[in-house]
Amino acid sequence: MARRAGPQIVLTEGAIRVHWGGRVLTILPAPALQNVEERADFVVDMDQILSFDPPHEAEEISVEELQAIAQAIEAEFDRLGLVVAFE
Image (cartoon, rainbow, N blue to C red; front, side):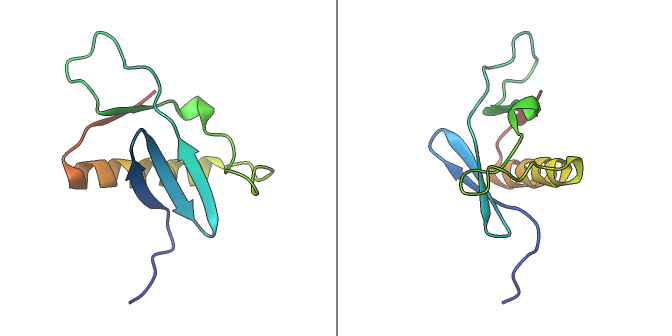
């Protein structure tokens, strides 16, 4: 089976874990958005995604990588019938 080159998303209890090219990124939920029509199951604060987890914390996440991560998260949440919000 061929391995996908893009980010792989794993939902854990209380976090999103992104695996990509031997690196890991753990995303903790941001506070729930207020005054929204549809409540999100998970809120991602995009400004908090700066680098990968140790030992790759010196690698800054590029804008292109951030876009790919957001798309992969959204696709995984859609696949599971969950709602994710990005702020």
